Image (cartoon, rainbow, N blue to C red):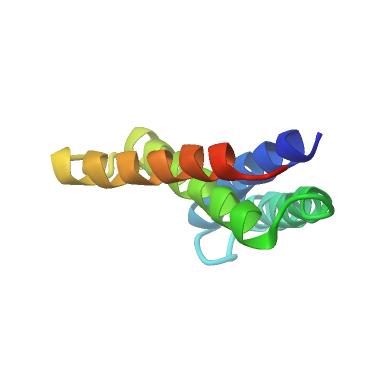
Length: 106
């Protein structure tokens, strides 16, 4: 369950990061509410995973999922540029996430 909680936390991080963009600096009420709820839920699930996972591993994977997901949705939703160098860098993050999971003693 700890890994499931961590994945949920990472996906919720993507949600609130994208929500910040839609809230336009917290000036739009409904997107701001969803963003805040996403933040709280993301931190809650991260805290559940931290009951059993090492802090450094969990935090790195949480931010990695958030980073990769936010980049992907940024390209899809906001037409942000994507090029080979960005793809390579995202690939390194994914490799890091997989590596941390594989070497985690939990």
